[in-house]
Image (cartoon, rainbow over all chains, first blue to last red; front, top):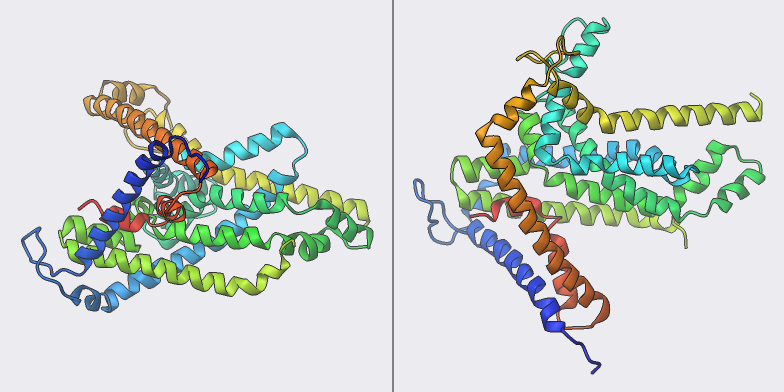
Length: 283
Length: 123
C-alpha cells in the first residue's frame, strides 16, 4: 500500500459531518414512522398512518402544485438563461464577459430573505412594477402579483438563473465554434446554424441545468412562504406549518420523506426522458 | 433582406435580449436600494423625498446591532470550519484512495439537494 500521510486527520472531520447529516436524515425517517400524540412533542409508537394521511387530496394537491411550480421554474430559467449563457461564452470583450458573470451570480449573494423581500417591494400592489405601470397609464388597477403563482415563479427563476447559466455556459464553451463556421460556409444562416448545430450540441448542459433547477426549486422555502403568503404552498411550507405551527413532527417528517422520494422519482424520470437526447451532445 | 442586414438585426436583438435579462437580474437589488432612500414612512415609486433616515434608524436600532454582531460571529465560525474541513477532505479526495470514499463524497454533496428534509431535521 502506498503511503498516505495524514489520511486520518484529513478525512475524519468530514466523516464526522457526514455522520451528522446521515443521523439527521435517519431521525427524520424514524419520526415519519411514529404516531402523533396531540399536545405532546414526544412521538408515540410506530405506525404507517402518516403516509396514508398523505394521500388526502389536500396534501396531494400541494405535491402536484410543487412539481408544477418546479417545472415552470426550470423551463423559464432555461429560456431566460440560454441567451445569457450564450452571451457569456461568446462575448469577445473580457471586461464585458466578467461584468455579465458578476451580474449573473448576484442573486446567490443576496441571501434568501433579503432577495425575497426585494421581490415583495417589486411585486407588491404599491410596489415598483405596479407604480410604474399605473404612472405610464398602461393599467388602471394595480395587478395582483403578490400571493400568486406568477410572483413565486418569477422570484424562483431569478435565484435559479445563476446555476442554470453556469451549467449552460460550461456546456456551450465545449462546443467548438468551427462547427458553426462549417455550417455557415455550407450556406446555413446564423439562425439555422444555431438551431441545427449549436443548440443540439449543448443538450448535455440543458439536461444538467434543467435537472439541477428542478431539484433546487423543489426545496425552496422562503420564496413561496413570503411571496406565496399561504396562497401558493410548496412542500417545504407544508413541512414548516405542520412542524412548527402544529408541532406535528411525525407528519412533517413523513411529508419531508415523501418530498425527497418525489424529487428522486421526478429526477429519475427526467433522466430517462433525456436519454434519447444525449446522442446530440459532443462525442 | 441582404445578408449583412440580417446579421446586424440579429446582433441588435441579441443585445436587447441580454440587456433585458441583466435588468431582470438586477431589478430587485436596484429597487430595494431606491426604496431604502425613500423619505416617507410609506413606500412609493419613485420616492417623493429622499433621505438617509432609515440608515440612521437601522444603525441605532438595538436588534439590528445585535443581529449584525451575531451574523458576523456565526459567519466567521461557519466559514472557517467549512473551509478547514472542506479543504482537508478535498485534499484527501484528490490524493488518496480510501474506504467509503464514494459514500462520503455522496453524503457530503447531497446536502444541497435535500434542503426540504434538512429543514425538518432540526427536531
